[in-house]
Length: 72
Image (cartoon, rainbow, N blue to C red; front, top):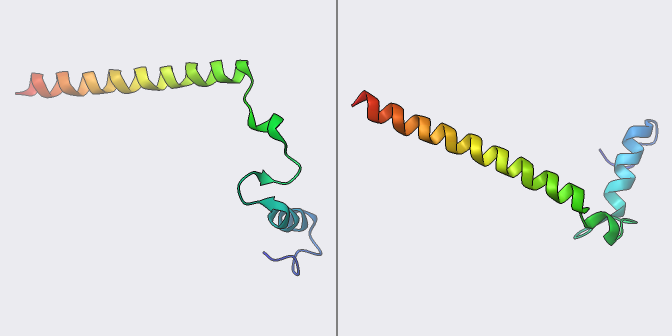
């Protein structure tokens, strides 16, 4: 919704302003490099989540292969 229609509703006005202030490569203006860099704790949490998802995928793949082998 454009800024012309967003004058009456605050949430629409903020969205329209954010769209205008957005930098094409960095996102919203005013966000520095501090927000771009992940903390060490966040990186560890991301790796842990990736490992959990990979292990679930591997377990499903192995189960599928065993099931297909068992059926034949």
